[in-house]
Image (cartoon, rainbow, N blue to C red):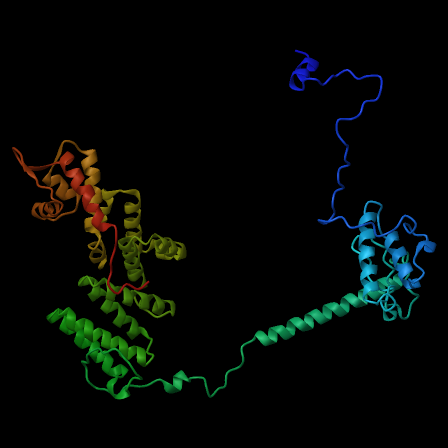
Length: 459
């Protein structure tokens, strides 16, 4: 269907063929309204006669300053902003006329309307006279920038600025220095250190809550006798509760009198060994921490022995960070010492999972290292038992397990396995363990060794 046929159906009676004569339109044309600016279209502020910059078109009542203001406004306005400027000027002048201020306003200094979008060129800046004193006035060009005179002036200016900055820095440094304290406010420890007068050899330990009383503190000669007495009592009675209390009282008397000598080292070493023997790791660690400080002062003692204890203690607490720090700070002589080397070998066997070497080192531990290893020997036995369960199937004899896990008797080994809920079975010739059935119990037993809780631990 053609467009003509389609429209003839929609508008019947309307012919698409135009006649030669002009026909009367079917509707009255209306011009579309002009777009409003800023919401409303204001009336044209300027008549056709007064549009433009012709001064003769200005109102005769306008002052000359207003005429100049209008001329400046149109000069600073682009063609596309002209209509907007005319509206703003009409509003400004009408407001001034209605308020009778048209002759009062300083039109020469009044800011131009916002429609003025041409930025006028700024006037050249004139430098102050003091900047050009002693030389010719500065012109707009830089022809003399590299002259000798200019270079010398710049050099002097930079030197002055450098000296000023240096002076300011020195003044700031002086203000940051701490004030020198008054000598009257400084405690003279040598003058105020007490010397005990107590002559009792035994004294219970009490935590100090005030300044120590010299009459309750034992002097150094009495402390020597006290140590001899404690050695004898430990050998004869082995009462650790009493011995620990007396050693803590002895250490307190040494501290309040600021006694740091070889005797102090002997006291701390003896107390640490007794604590290891009785498995009091909290008290041992306090002594070990103090001994490390005393050894750093150059006092005589047994630093290699206690360095080995320190490494074994870190293995017990699984403190890898402190182990690495200790290894990094050790000298070559310390690493070659037999006691320290044994502790390092224990660390190496644990790191590589060599349980056979570990238990051999446990059996040959020097000094009191075996007491420290006793604290984590069951943990390592559980780890070794898991490996045995994986490597040996279907079963292993109790005698072989007893030897590999460093037990003294088969009965002790059976007691350890019973604590893990593993029971040996009777064979034709000897007892044995079904390794496949024992593995889940050995793996479950490791959960109780995930955390290490030590009373009184001090790092």
